Amino acid sequence: TLSKAIWGFPFLLLSAVYRTISSFIPLLYKLNILSAKKASQIVISVGNLTIGGSGKTPFTLCLGKALMNYVSIAVVSRGYRARIESKKQVIKVRDSKGIHCFVEDCGDEPYLLANHLTSATVWAGPDRWQGIQKAIESGSKVVILDDALQNFSVKKDYDIALINAPDLLKEVFYIPFGPFRENFLALKRCHLVVLNQVFEKQDIATYEKVLRKHYQGPVCFVCMSIDDEFKGRDSLFNVEFLKKKRNLALAGIANPSAFKKQLLQKEINLVDFISCNDHQIFHSELINSINEKVDKQNIDYIICTEKDWVKLKRFSFSVPLVYAPLSLNFIQGKQNFDGFVDEVVRSSNLK
Image (cartoon, rainbow, N blue to C red):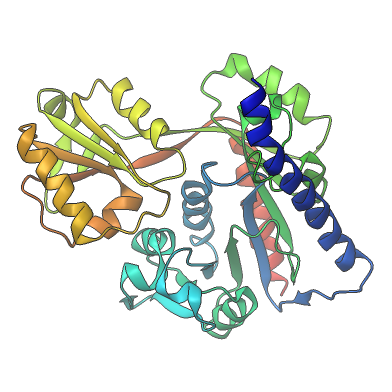
């Protein structure tokens, strides 16, 4: 309609500005007008072409677990919406001795990664180069930079891009009119592309045909799914058990509706669902409103994502809080992932 067109026009103009800037910055580095810093050890960036919701955290976890079987690794995260984001220093989230900060200090994603990557060091802070240096000083041979595909200030040995496969079939609109940070030309500098949201093998040919117009390297086709056993403070809860209960679910992720859909596919009985902002900061007022809903609707369990769990577990709820663990499943191309891991390990041994 006309009103929608008028409302959207300023955002379209801002998108054009964003596109110009996002194209101009890498050109400055290419022409050596700006210089990128080179680390003494292997640096891998894991990023995406769009804002949020492409599976970066589960993939980073998968990559980290695979690599730390062979080499000492670190993960460096920006610490989005954490206390550290407004400061210039980088903090150590974990090392071999354990976790050294609160989730509010470092952010939900680095804290979640720190919970799982027990043999790694995890760092958080806005200065990526400082994070890399601290990681190398602590003995890491491979540094994984979370959400750094568009960061050109550091020379990366490997770039990995995650894409939600359906986005390949959409028209590219830049932020803020659309979700894109870069167009598909960015894939030319990538060493591995991971297509997420591929649920059936029969869909692969359609997505690959479009992808190959922009990228000729190795590809993994994956999907994310929640496990059949949910976790609480001290207990496991089977899906079959939760099907018979009155549940309230909430999600503070980039795409809350995807989490709701996964729960419904498991036939979880959802009485209510609360969509929160990505990287939601939970405060006592919000917790009180959740508890009010629980009491009014006779809720038995509150179900959340693991990213929310690391922030919510310190609060008191009137019923048990459980989270649904998320798994990354390879539909096709697992050998490309394994080959990438092997290459990184070989390269790190040459440093």
